[in-house]
Image (cartoon, rainbow, N blue to C red; front, side, top):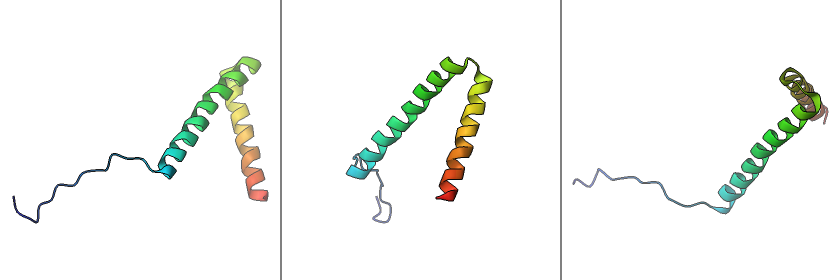
Length: 67
């Protein structure tokens, strides 16, 4: 095999930052499903759930921009 052709492989490891972000993403992702189920249980409709998420998103965006 010529020296110019090298096989490149990915490292099979996670650093501290990678592991931290993986855990944080898992917590946020699972939290979204838990909260959505609880909101739907209280309001009783998928349409209202979308409305609540849109209102919450608008309020969050407004607060972030005003900060």
